[in-house]
Each structure stands twice: as C-alpha cells, then as structure tokens.
Amino acid sequence: MRFRTLGASGCAISAFSLGTMTFGSETDEAGGHAQLDRFFDAGGNLVDTADVYSGTESESIIGRWLARQPAEIRDRAVIATKARFSTGGGPNDAGLSRRHLTRALDGSLRRLGVDCIDLYQVHSYDPLTPIQETLEFLDDAVRVGKINYVGLSNFTGWQVQKTVDIADARHLRRPVTLQPQYNLLAREIEWEVIPACMAEGLGLLPWSPLGGGWLTGKYRRDELPKGATRLGENPERGVEAYANRNAAQRTWDVLGTLEEVAAGRGRTVAQVALSWLRDRPAVSSVILGCRTLGQLEENLGAVDLDLSADEVDALNRASDPGAADYPYGGPGQEQRSRKVEGGR
Image (tube, rainbow, N blue to C red; front, side, top):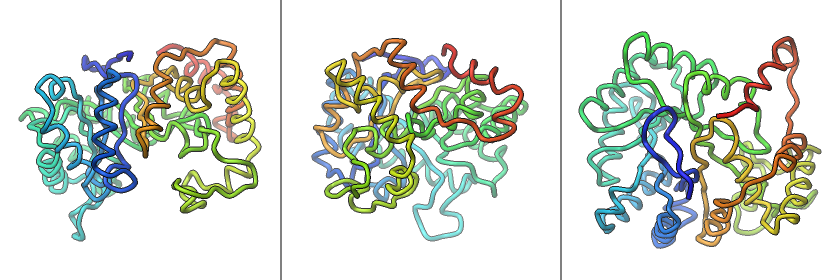
C-alpha cells in the first residue's frame, strides 16, 4: 500500500481508504469486521464513516471492531467521521451550529470508543450557520484534543475558498481535506473545486470512485439493472440514476475505453477506474465503499496498478465532460485545464 499525506498535514494515510457507508445496512457487522480485517492486512489505515451512516450503526460497528484490536492496529488506524445531517427529530439536531456539533462529536467519540477522532469533517455546507461559528467550534475541539484535523465534504469551490479565508483571517484551524464525489463519470469538480483545493493545499478524498457501480462494467445499455445492487433496487437512485447515465453517450464511451485498457492489462474495469482516480491531481486517498468482502478484494487489486500516459490520456478524452458556456468555456479555460492536469 502506498502512503500520502492527509492534505497539507503531516499525517500519513493510505492511498486507498475504506468507506463504511454500507456497514449496518447492506453489510452486516460480521461482514464489516471482515472488510476491516482485510483492509488492514493489505496495509491500509484510513477508515471513513459518518454519524448518519445506517442510523449511527456504522460508527458503532467500527467502534466494536477497534475495541478488540491489539494496540498496534488501534495506533495505526486513522479514523475519519462526519457531522451535519440529522440524527434526531429536533430543530437543532442538524446543521453546523456549535450546539449541534458539540453533541454530534461527543456521540461519535462514544460510538467509536476513542478519545480523539483523527479527521472530523463537516458533511456539507450549512447556509443557516455562519461558517465562523463552525470553525470556532472545530478549532476549540482541536485545542482540547477531541479531534486532530478538520475536513470538509460536498463543498463547492466558493464555499471552500470562503471557509479557508475566514479560518486564516481569524487564526482558526483551517481544513486539510475535501471529500467530494469524483470519478470518470463525475469530473465537473475539476472546473472550480479542485483548483480551489490545490491553491489552498486541501487534499481530496473522493467518494463514489466507481460511480455507484457504473464503473465496474456490470450495467448494460438499455437493460435496467436487477438484483443485489442499489440501482437494482432503485434504478432512479440519485446522481447514479440509470435513465440519465444510460442516455448519455459519454457513459458508454468511458466504459468502452475502460474495457479496452482493462483487457490489455489483464485487470478489471473497476481496478483501472480506481487507478486513474488515485493518480489525479490533489487526491490524497480514494474511498473504497464495498458491500462485500469480494468487492473489496477486487478493488484492492488497484493498489499496484499504474497506468501509462497513453492509457490515462485515452480515459481523459473519453470522460471529458466538456465545459458549460462562459465562464467555463471562455477566456482562462485553457489555463485552468493545465492547472488541473498538472502535478499534485
């Protein structure tokens, strides 16, 4: 397993991390513990969860796994969780206010069975709470030793920049990471979000690296998915909805190119897609979210896969989302593209 730093911090994390959104729902506790065992056996150390995954059960499953681990594993584990969304029915049981985050953080510490959370992420922007209030809470939490690092999730480019600017102006703890959706079928964050992160030293922790299963090659054109997948249960699910992606020629161009590269390398489509994402500018760690141990095993096959410049170029061309009209397609777009395609 390769290691990188958690954004601009000095904390070393594995280039692939284990996402646990399925723990407690699609993946039972035994299955979740088996995934954690295998992930650490493979050399991984970053585990990502949230206080709303499976109604807080994901955090509890991780906590019970940590409790039975030897000191060496507990010390090696880098634990990341998130807060923002509702875990109750009251008007203050959601958001990024000091009141809600105080209770949310204490709840996560209790369920995880740890004294300090390594990366505490705000799960999305809260338009009702001044970001200064949120940052002051997070700064206090770092100072008293409840968290080590601050992260963002699902922020737009202007929200990232505003957050960093206020943190710097007020001498508060600045975020070190952003967790966005990012994959070969969702590259629009390259227009503004990634440049903002690169300019301010935030590392990316992409979620949905396989596009909800689309980038595994298991879906076929004009054939509604069936069986034990989230799209099989609900083909119109969110940003991964079958109808929209099925209708887009770009989807099938990407999958066709992935299949060609995978066949030439003797690898799976998913492994090629993960390798491409791991080596994108600013990526600190790619979050692997698996229902089964078999899926995790396949995904870990990307650990030692390095694509050639020609293979990367072919995937970039096939997955290019194009650009909307001005300002993305206007003056300055060429310079922006060079920046995003540049080194980390």
